[in-house]
Image (tube, rainbow, N blue to C red; front, side, top):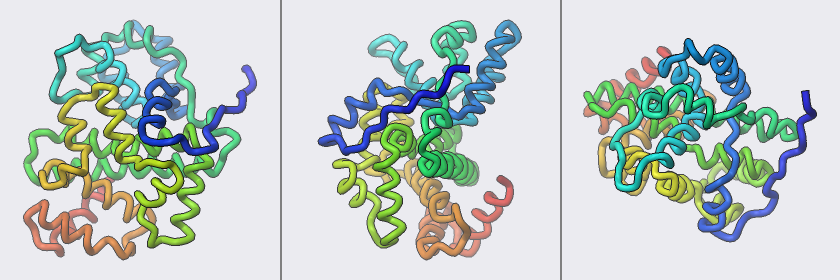
Length: 283
């Protein structure tokens, strides 16, 4: 096996959102080592692989999910789009053999961050939080009887992908943000991001989603500027709840979260709290 080469990290912030967008437009997106290994096992048995088998592997990894959606969107003819797109339908549109032809051996986050153990743990924590947010989002959407459960889950799952990419490509900057917030928990996240990165990650997420021509509905419900719409609040509240309960249910922001979730679900706060605990225990 070839030795793992040191990764080229960004150690100083780029000038602005436009510069960060240009950098990430074509930047490598590594995936979990478990994803890379599972895809190679399926490649070795390609003739017996179907879209459902591939989807099971890809959907367990938000970064691989992002890569597939961006790839499929990039292959779409100009002027055509699909309002909602799942991993499975993306694979059906692509085909099994073309998928393996387009996606060779996938680089892993573990290899990329092998010399940055604190950053690797920060990214792993964010990946766990993304899975948690997706789980809450499904629970809220099902309770509301929403017909777009799949895309709501996807929006919550991918909501923090810009931060995931930052951990991969600018780990020291992300560690600086994390340290600043630990030192002063009252600091607003966007203020720290502007100070350290010269931009906000929410803006980078939206810009990249549009640049990569991801499905229109997915882009819209990931945009917190549309928080007046219930489908967007579903996503935002799932992400908030996942963030505030990662280390237990005693976060001081939790009562406000529960009040807002109660309004979304048309329930009283006591019932909403019991409901989110039920979702959490079912995970």
